[in-house]
View 1 (spheres, rainbow, N blue to C red):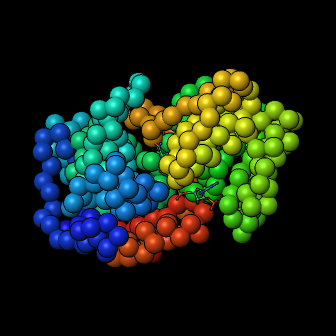
View 2 (tube, rainbow, N blue to C red):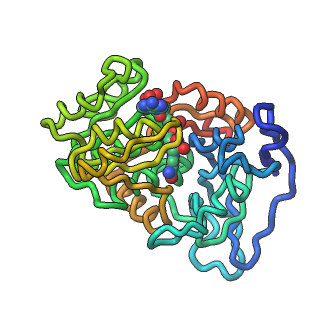
Length: 340
Ligand SMILES: NC(=O)c1ccc[n+]([C@@H]2O[C@H](COP(=O)([O-])OP(=O)(O)OC[C@H]3O[C@@H](n4cnc5c(N)ncnc54)[C@H](OP(=O)(O)O)[C@@H]3O)[C@@H](O)[C@H]2O)c1
């Protein structure tokens, strides 16, 4: 079977396609034929060895997010059967309850080998059934971006209808947050760095779109769009010094969900205290949250926004496309030649 590995120094052509024997499932293992893999910003960080303090293992199989079909199960597997359509958990050991730092040690495509391969072995507890209405390409978008957006909006003090939600950008996490906010009946404001994405963001249902370069004082614009109050929830995917502006755009007592690591710089915590804003860090989500999210997707019939699908052989091109920032929604690599 084919499997990509990251080999050699960062910055080079380190995405190497290798051949390896197909693995055999142990008693509790499930063998999945991967149909599609989606890329996250984090995969760029791993690729460029900017992840986990530059401690990415040479030879790592990259990517956390894959969906596929069960083709073999061990004799103690009782949750899944051959033919089931599944996606893997980003954090395979986080089944439910509060996050524990141990769960982060073996994140797929980071601490342990990921899913950019024809076949991958999973523990049965590290898989969830995917919504039946989604293709494997769509289902591959769920494990990191969708679950993070779900955890942001519903994992803390949850979003309720009528509240204001601020989304930063048009990437994977932000567009899932837009989808979930709209399902809930929230008012949505989307901030983008690119004027050419405005029309599409409005088409996708954002109630208002602010283009960052046109409105340098965008926190004031958010407050103006929310009756002078600010957003109840800010889905903060930029990070660094941008968090200070997000706090300014947040309502007194509202929540800034700290997700992103795209920017550098620090914030002054004074505004948090003065305005009672809750800064809530989060790391993807648990299996039970994934199942709750899949129920909501199934009931609503909602679908992810897929930007581009690349064939498996062109994985390096998919990485370059994500790096360019022109994408809107998810960049996917398909292992099924019929779908690209
Ligand atoms: N904590 C967690 O568990 C977790 C989980 C998933 C992702 N993340 C982090 O969240 C971030 C987004 O991940 P992703 O996979 O959704 O990335 P992505 O699909 O590559 O999207 C990134 C988007 O961010 C927007 N952006 C960049 N700089 C911006 C700025 N200064 N102001 C406003 N928007 C800006 C851009 O949208 P426009 O082109 O529209 O401006 C860009 O397309 C990354 O830092 C990632 O590491 C964290």
